[in-house]
Length: 153
Image (cartoon, rainbow, N blue to C red; front, side, top):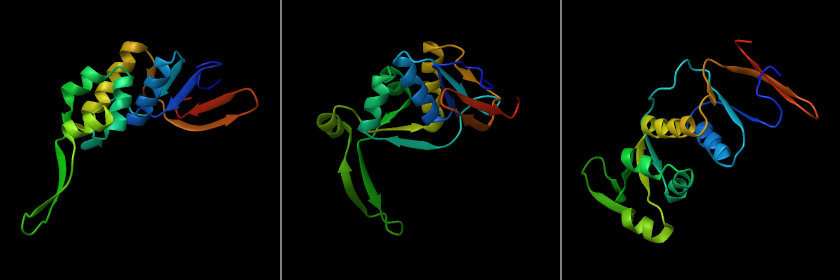
């Protein structure tokens, strides 16, 4: 196989938040995973990310509860503001209300901080699962196998 991960393993192309979350979920289920990322290094990028209680429930299930609590902010509520006057309208309460209703908080993160938490979770669970400088450029499959082609060979 061009991808080199072998039969019965999962390859994830892309080491962003979605790819890392999927990889960690699979690793936590005992499934062998390799993540291929085209960038030469994984570093902080982006801006803010809002995650509702459904998403923070998943992050807790992945064993990341203490880590996300260190880097995230529990949001008390949301409101809209009229640009010209500053007048506000409350949309809904979050914070304790979210935890009370759904069991988990609504949180905000810097994208880079959330990415780093997922990355550390994978490195702790399966060192060597992430492969950098591996840009996926194609793939093929038959009844038995999937082959991944990378720009670097």
